[in-house]
Figure 1 (tube, rainbow, N blue to C red):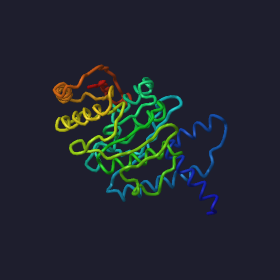
Figure 2: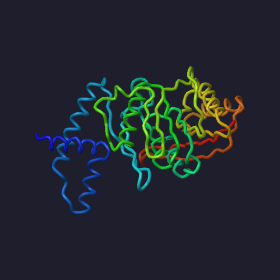
Figure 3: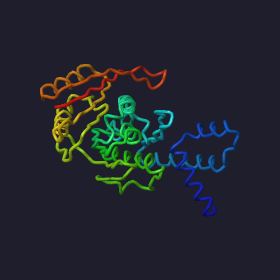
Figure 4: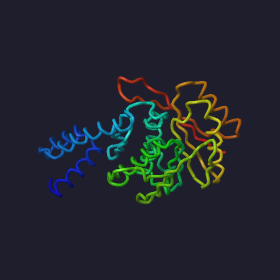
Length: 287
């Protein structure tokens, strides 16, 4: 294989990780062009690589999903196919992330030029949407689990660095930072039970973090700490209503900690016609 052919294969693999080959095929056929044979060959090689990677990762099955969030906006994420992987639910994109991402696009003025902190960022759908559409001054992703942080950083590189995916993400440790247009992007590890918010932020975002009564108290305390760093700071928390008692526990803990629920809006989300419809509530919180 020549050096030129090797480079074409590398570019093809990056391209295929960002866009489903079926969609690419249809778009090319629509304008009466033929698909480059190397694209199919790269796709076959990529599938075999992913199968090998699955065997090397303790039988964790990864995939690349491309979400079309607007006519000119797609976000591609590396995810697992399982709701729980490596002892965490953070390797899967949850319903409230989609709703919060959509809400942020519609309410972009609330985020334009702001310093934004995301709690429980997961794989990055909400944050990447905000960065690409809302022009924040800075965006800080935070999460706790090592595998989530590594995959999140990989997803940031896929979407903000022209699909450039490093051979290894071992070097992507806590404190990862990159610039994207007018936004300073960073990733930090944050343990709600022991860590503190050291910087000041204008906006705090969180999606699908209200799911277990045991973490509600530390969640509310870290929200309160973050909002207390800046006058007029606001949090927007999107919660899928799975258990009404858990959500009521969150609401009551907010009130007992003197946090104000300024606004509450109800939304629905359905991933596909075969899936049940979910109810998501977005709360606006202030001190």
